[in-house]
Image 1 (tube, rainbow over the protein chains, first blue to last red):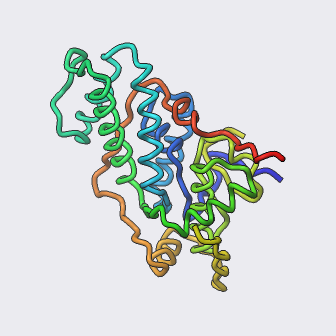
Image 2 (image 1 turned 90 degrees about the vertical axis):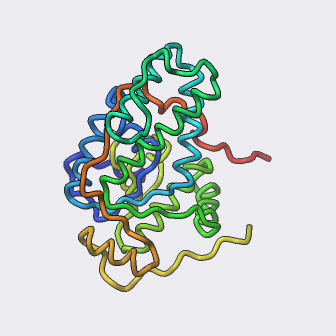
Length: 196
Length: 66
């Protein structure tokens, strides 16, 4: 039996694991999935849902996604808009940026994008009740089991292990907020965010 | 890496029914539960989706074949 995909208005569980895709979409209004992520994040904020995430995994995935993002950006103005938005929200210590302020060096652009997205995601997490779980050998050992049993790649396997941990500690089902469709095939997993 | 340990046995207590109960269980297990900031900090930006780049390293993993 595949994972159960929840409706946006279903009662939220008391604790839920959240992955990088969910948090990234939650801060990007132009992503077509944003309204779904935003609705859930707003509900989590109001209801005090405990959100579990792995900071180490989040950073590794964020750096990787930013690399591709910056590599394909054709207009410096897009990067300037990102940095300025973060500054306006108080998430950055920088002054307002114009397109001409974006450094020509790809390395510097990459650095700016990474630092800014780290702040944006950090600001989003600050609005929630959160538990940051370390990428420990114990978590990795659980993830390794998922690689074998579910044919998941390493990052996804860690997220499943995190959902397992949340469930084991609280006696609840395994809940995961994600836009990664690889999880749809996981038996007994409760998914949030994706359209059924 | 050493062989994975068996999952810890489920607690005999009933499932946490509220976020407060879940937070209490997590604290008892040694986790630090961070409360939300008193002032909303989140911001939304308008940019092309980053998910295609994020998912470049995802997808099902093909098990090794004989």
